Image (cartoon, rainbow, N blue to C red):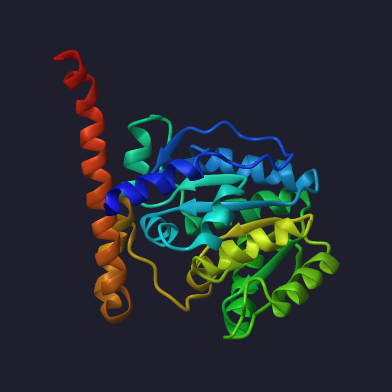
Length: 281
C-alpha cells in the first residue's frame, strides 16, 4: 500500500502547472521528479542567461534527502513542481537519471557555486548571500572575493533568525531586502526543505532574481564545515565521510535515504524487466 501511495503522488506531480514561463525540456524523472539540466556548464549558462533577462527563477539540486522529504512535505513538492532548473545531486540520483538520459552527470550546489560566481562576476551580475550565520557569510564573502579576483559585486548579505519561517513575515522582509539590493542572483543556504520553500515563495512574489539553493556550500567556502576529500566525492561516497564525521545528526537521515534508494532500485528493476514480461505473454 505504501508503494502504491508513493507512486500515486509521483504520477500526480508529473503534471506540472502552467506558470506562463518557458519550460526547459525534461531529461529524466527520479521518483517522479524532473531533472532538466544535465551538467554544470549547462546549469551555469542557464542561470547567467536568466539573470541577464532579470527573470524570477529557482535552481534546485535533487538528491536522496530531498526525495525522502518530497514524499511527505507538500510545500516542498510545490516548490519542486515550479522549479526552473533542476540538476542531479548525489551519485544514486545521477545514476538513476542516466538510465533515461546518458548525458546527466552529478551537479551539486557546492561544486557549482564558485564556477557560477565566477561567471556572474564576468557578466557583471550582483549576488546576494542569504542564510547560514553572519560570521559564515562574512568569511564566505571574503573568500569569494579572492576567488573572483575582487570582480564579483556582493550586493548584500543576510542571516535569518533560528525561527525563520520561509513563508512568513521575516521571509517577506528578506525578499524586500534582496529586491532593494539589486542582486540578480541570490545564494540561498538554509538547508532543505526550508531553502527551496523560501526560494519558491520569493519566485511567486515576483522577485526578479535567481534563487540558487546551495545547502552547506557557503559553510564549506568559509571553512565552517569540512567537505569530504575529493576521492570520496569522485567515488560517490561523500555520504560516508559525512556520516563518519557527524553520526548523531545524520544516521537517521541516511537510514531514510537508504530505504528510499532501495525502493527506487526495486522499481527500476521491475521497469527494466517489464518489456520482456510482455513479450512472453
